[in-house]
Image 1 (tube, helix red, strand yellow):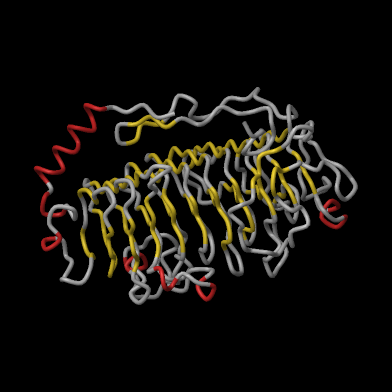
Image 2 (cartoon, rainbow, N blue to C red):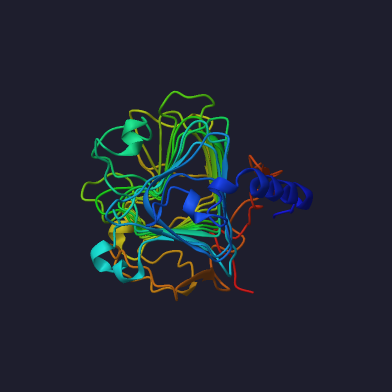
Length: 421
């Protein structure tokens, strides 16, 4: 839920308009490093509702400054310069269901030859970024490969080397706050997100058609305390979630992932690794009420660097259309079983009874059909098989730009969508 702090918001807007006019794109394009041909350089202030912003070079939100992107803004990224968005300050992308914010490329370039992106960089938040919000925001066609001349490489950000495919979102402040809710990540070359610190909520997002040879939906490292709930993952190249405590940052990574729907993940990776949720390197993971349909494996661990012994896995549901898939769900040395899981042994066991999704869809099909409906119908084994007996990290919420964003309450119906009203 969101509770609007009107007085904070009015005061914030007044401050921005009166004190930051030079960098307010909506107020004065000529004074914002546009060079007459688009936006680049240092940017802060407000991109106003319904506007179109063309980014022709890397942009940087300076430390201590804020960029607010209002509902309906379309951000067009240049496919020749392949810009990166560097966030040293605060970044708030505040779309609505009716008018989302969209980071994309020119419409005539959105085609199958660019299905897996690489047409612009990503949003890269440095350790000085205190707050980053993506609400009702669409990100597509990014994940460009870095070079020695990339701003992120020169600044030592992300992996700080050339030849890396950038994620849609990188966040790295262990003391910061990150909320990603009601968003869509699609058509990226590799990872959708790569998170190395912060208090974090990922809720009600969709991740689909991403990763050409590798890449996860949500990739979490040490320094993160996170709730990950009610997300849809379809055809991510490798795992929906990669959960790790690698990096030796404090605090230890603690991730509560619940009521997610994970479909057809892992099959397009050229080499065998994971395919649903991967846990490793002493991550403290709590995994409940997740629905896996035709994912390549069950929850998998790194046997040489396993998860924290306190980790809890329970009441997840597994469905496989063919026997080979079902066999790869079965608990083993590297596939982690959970308490009270709904898991069969034969092809077709535990049909989730989706409202509209052909369960025989090719498992290596990366294309997402927007008419699919992953609510479950009456008689689904997902109904009532989950648990609500666990404590979320951020049930009380995180305050971002005058709003409170809370981790949604769990549902005893396994999966992200429940039954249709």
